[in-house]
Image (cartoon, rainbow, N blue to C red):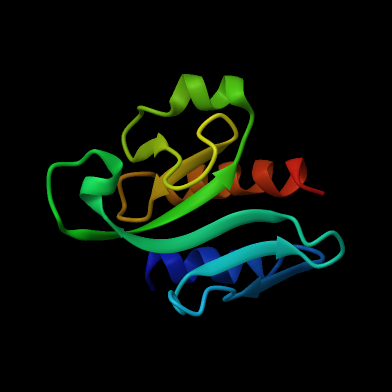
Amino acid sequence: MSLKNRLIEYTQTLTDIQIDHPFKKFPDYKVLRHKSNRKWFGLIMVVEKNKLGINTNDKVEILNIKSDPELISTIKNSSGLFPAYHMNKNNWLTILLDGSVPFEQIISLLDYSYKLTI
């Protein structure tokens, strides 16, 4: 099972969430949000690696999550973690879903995002 599918499966165990596809132009993008307040805590998409500063046009699945600015400044240049693609770089972080970040770390960061946006 792909990291993306494992992530979606995990997300469905959380309380009060919905996964939707709000972008007609990008039907494969998945927004992870709270049903009650409609706030996003994650965005799954596919982008070219060069958009993250990686010198290739290959595509990669990513997860954008909300986080604390201090935590972001500490970890944003760790393997597989980047300043957020197409989001506020002070409050969002991009995680590669290519195996470079352990699944347990992804879940920990996603849980933190979930709690920040309740």
